[in-house]
Amino acid sequence: MTQLFDLSGRTALVTGSARGIGFALAEGLAAAGANVILNGTRADTVAEAVARLSDKGFNAQGRAFDVTDESAVAEAFAQWDKDGVPVDIVVNNAGIQFRKPLVELELSDWQRVIDTNLTSAFIVAKQAARRMIARGTGGKIINIGSLTSEAGRATVGAYTAAKGGIKMLTRAMSAEWAASDIQANAIGPGYILTDMNKPLIENAAFDAWVKSSNPSQRWGKPEELVGTAVYLASPASSYVNGQIIYVDGGWLAVL
Ligand code: NDP
Image 1 (cartoon, rainbow, N blue to C red):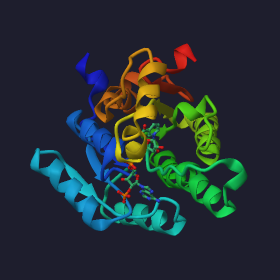
Image 2: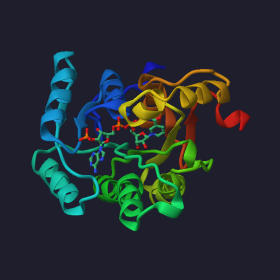
Image 3: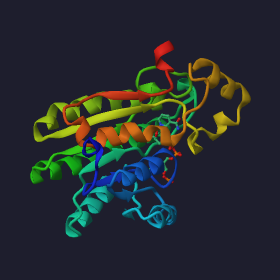
Image 4: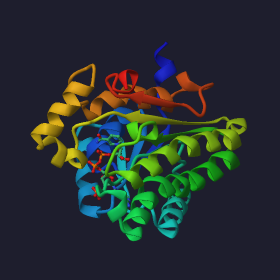
């Protein structure tokens, strides 16, 4: 039974894992036995996050790169090839938010949000899946969606388009890669207590709305996403493909 969720001997890359949800997922995958590779845009904060996991006895390494930069991503994978590090599990977690009504949104800001939240998942998974297919060992792709993969919300149009795209990109990945024993799935977190939501958490009206609109009547914590991530990274999900699992306290259930 425990082997179902055992990640021993597997290597997991979690993008955007210097903090927030990504860090919690990296720690959770490491606790399930995986060797983890942390990532973010800054070498110093990535190194600090690696040290926090190493201090707990986990096998962690880090590499700072911008997930929207195709050549930087290709270089990272080429280096792991040289080092004999096979990436078996990818969590496409790196993301940004930018709030502005659509009629005021500049194209450059739209593009930045789409690139970081959607195009990056294609860029990173493409490098990983090519290698998984060549090795013939299968693999796991876990894309991080959102409630906005399902529901529109005002002032986050580009983010909503990107996260809706994540849901369908996950299905496209399944269509092409399932035959190579690669399971591509997504997680759709609800409102979670992280830096990304700091302005919302500090806004009393928004905080009250999150609590009143959710049957759980509270925000979620990053570590509450770990169980789903371990499941989707493990042999337990070997015939699960193209799904998005919402971990939202029930928010979508009562929409
Ligand atoms: P945070 O803002 O707390 O952390 C974001 C992480 O992504 C940081 O480590 C950041 O790196 C990294 N990142 C951002 N841009 C890039 C880039 N171009 N290249 C590499 N790394 C990058 O966000 P959360 O933890 O809240 O969010 C994580 C994911 O979960 C995102 O995809 C988000 O959309 C999604 N999500 C979050 C929800 C929430 O309520 N918090 C709800 C639903 C989905 P650095 O530290 O260097 O800045």
